[in-house]
Structures are given as structure tokens and as C-alpha cells.
Image 1 (cartoon, rainbow, N blue to C red):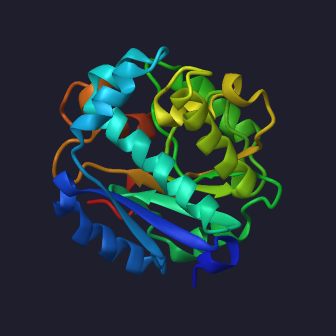
Image 2: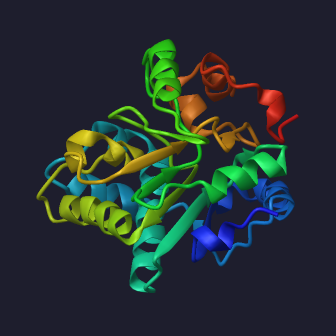
Length: 251
């Protein structure tokens, strides 16, 4: 049995009304791994988001150009802010395209071994531009301790991650400082980069990854923004990291 509840007080499932065809298979997968969702939050198409972004003095241009980055980013802000306001000590946030390890014993060991001292627990990693996959793999393996490792200074992925209250305050603060014009509004998972927290936020990454993002229904924003539009960008990244995709509940 995977004891998610021993590590996280609340699980938030973040979905999008435009991709609701993903939800049945997501729920089947969450049930398989014993993950109970305490709150499902829906992102919706929102024309006001572009108006808000374009009114800010400093933004990452992708936040203006790409509706998916805006919509997803604001959804993660709302999820972290909701958990923070509700007094949750540790929350787990999952997107709608994740699939976990087939081996539930291995997954249970990963969850049980999650480092207590971390502020952000990454169960997945996202490809970031043209980064050197071999160098990242070497870093992850060199720093691995048991089923967890230390990511590089610029980790990405909000597909499945946990936040301590310090982690929640950090993510919420990044967005709210941007809304107030005190810093640049960035792509949400770029706030995990060290330049935003200066090493004050402690990260841990499951290794091997506890879950991966897979094509479900429409192409993911990652594939269309950074890949060739064929939906395979992220899967190729996992292979480059040396992961066996057959180890995950993805056919």
C-alpha cells in the first residue's frame, strides 16, 4: 500500500475543462496507486488572464503568447494558495496527464522515503529547452540517496509535486510579487529555478522518477511549445534520462 496520507495532508488534482476527456483515465490511475484526491480544481478558458498579464510591467513573453502557460500557471497559483489558506502542512498537486510506476511496492518505497527536510518534492521532471540530458542524468545519479536525489539548479515540472508550507508561501509569493509589479511574471515551474529562491528552498527529486507525463487526448502544452508537435517530446526526454517507459503505467 502506498501511504500518501502519511506524507501529504491534501492532494489537489488540477484539471482543465478543455481536456476533461483526460479525467476518467486519470481517476483510474489515481485509484490504482491509492491516491485520494481531496480537492479537484478546474482551470477554465479565461480571456481576462491575457488582460492581466499584458497589464503587468514585467513578464516572460511566453506568458503573453501562450494561453496554456497562463492558464496552467494561474491554476498552480490558486492550488498552492488554497492549500496555504486552508492551513495544510504538506500538499500534493497532480496534473491530469501523469502515470505512476507500475510497481506499487517501488512507488510505496519512494513515497515513504521522501526527505522530511525538503520544501518541494518533485515526483517528475520536465524537459527544459535544449538542456544536456546526459549531464542531468549524471547529476541525478551522482546525487541519489536511496530513491531520492538532488535536482540541478534549474528543475522544471509541476506535473506531480509536493509543497511544504514554506514551499507554498514561496510559490504564492512569486506570483503575488509579480502581480504587484515587484518582479517578473514567469512560467510557473520556472520559479523552481535557483535564481528565484537563492537556495532558500530545498528541493528533492524522486529517482528513478515516480511518475511521468504522457500524451492523453490533446497534445500537451509542452509538446506543442517545445517539441515538434507530435506529442513525443516529453517521452523522448524520459528515454534520454535512461528511464524504462515500460516501468510506468503507460501503454
